[in-house]
Amino acid sequence: MTPPVDVSRLIARLDALGRIGALAGGGVSRPALTPADGAGRALVVGWMRDLGLEPVVDRIGNVFATRPGAVPGPSVMIGSHIDTVATGGLYDGNLGVLAGLELIAALNDAGIVTERPVTVAVFTNEEGARFQPDMLGSLVHVGGLDLAAALDTVAVDGARLGDELEAIGWAGEAPIGGVAAAAYLEYHIEQGPVLEAEGIEIGVVEGVQGISWTEVTLAGRASHAGCTPMRLRRDAGLAAARIATGVAEIARDIGGDMVGTVGSLRLRPDLVNVVAESAVMTVDLRHPVEATLAEAERRLAGLIARVAAEETVAASTRVLARFAPVAFDRDLVGRVEATAAALGFGHRRMPSGAGHDAQMLARVCPAAMVFVPSADGLSHNTREFTAAADIERGLRVLASLALDLAGRVGDVPRAEEIRG
Ligand code: HGY
Ligand code: MN
Ligand code: MN
Image (cartoon, rainbow, N blue to C red; front, side, top):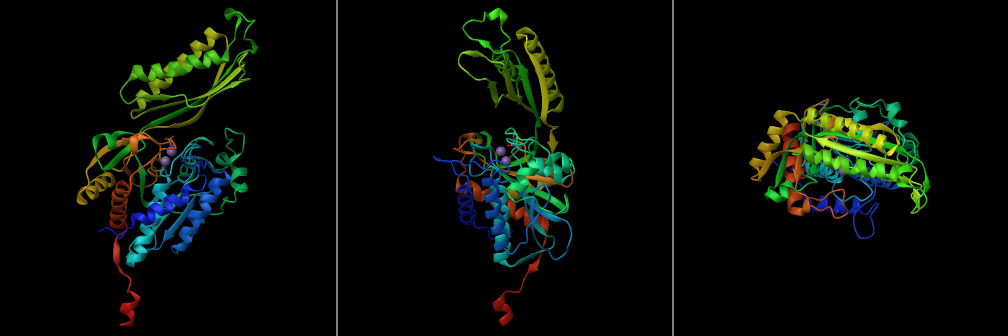
């Protein structure tokens, strides 16, 4: 049975949240623990209170709002994130959190009493673009990262995570891991081209591929671009460029699902007539099979050593994130599939190319995800878009399954019934 969810109400909330950090020309910029993130949190927590929930904030800033069930205990948790990359869209993360609120609203509207509590969760710093690793808040929640170490994480802009959390007023007092989940569901846009290309309405996500993020620092020597013979240069910019092309060659040579990305590359002094003294770059490698991801990492290490020697620069590396592939709970994945089928939606099983908080919750409870198509396969792009009809289908799958998992004790007597 599907609670009476209202997709227009969900879309209105997506639009309202999207106005916080809105970019001229479209898109959203709400990087983790910036004032825009703080304002987004305040809006969402206000909606939680409007729905009769009492949100709690833990010490890493995760927010949990629970609708009580007839029987106290671990809840059915619906979660995701509302921080975005700096060139983000309306849907990445936000859809999963606001769909959870829409479920709560529908349960309230219908007067449904669930057996289990239902919790909506907002996890801190899922994106990992400002503070690494990604999925940091949910990783701390499940005990995968020490709170003190997380609070001492330094951003790419030099800020300390704990200071930023205090500065935006979202350093909570609730203990880490204090809200237990019996099961975790995350509703998310696919962020890639598969569902749209195949004309399929629902993605039944079987797991998340492995993720390897490395920061590479190359130290050469600044010199005059016009006066320094090529043979005498220690050009960090050239070394970085060779590594960047080498990353693409590694991914293409391994082939299949292997992907490799150099998303950030900063040169110093970054001047037209100066041979670059230093380069700091990031390498994002991903693959569904751990052994293959490890092979790509080995090849990257060899590439860096070889280029550094040939260009006479010093190279150092720092791991920013490393997560092995995660398989979601088989039974729960099966129930996502069965729910989509029961609702008559076309569906297919698939892996997630992107990381998600669900991969962390999977460490402590059965977790699964529901995907809907991304227009043009775009995400982490201001043109990110998912049509209302697609949003509604995913919402109905999420709501139906969540109510099944929570159990339905019965309807609270409606006021008119009581009056007789
Ligand atoms: O990078 C990712 O996969 C996610 O967006 N944090
Ligand atoms: Mn996301
Ligand atoms: Mn993202």
